[in-house]
Amino acid sequence: MPAPYSNDFRQKIVYAYKNNEGSMNKLAERFKVSVNFVSTLLERFRQTGKVEPKPHGGGCKPSIGAGGQHLIKN
Image 1: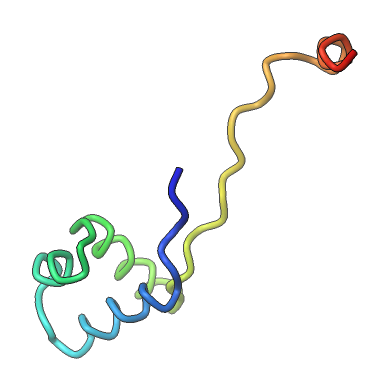
Image 2: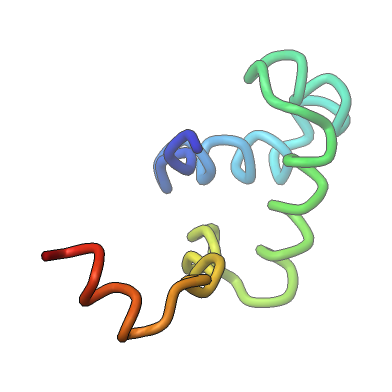
């Protein structure tokens, strides 16, 4: 999975949108990201005032229990 975009890059998109430098479609094209990313970023900024990505949600739980892991390690 690729790393999230930097906060500096995200801030540039928000700044450009707030300064009426283009629509979400034009900004997505300009910054080479998806329109959905721009939309989600702007919505998060409106709601929280922040551009940071959400923290990682975790992932899948192990399908092997502690006993099974012990057998695999040895």
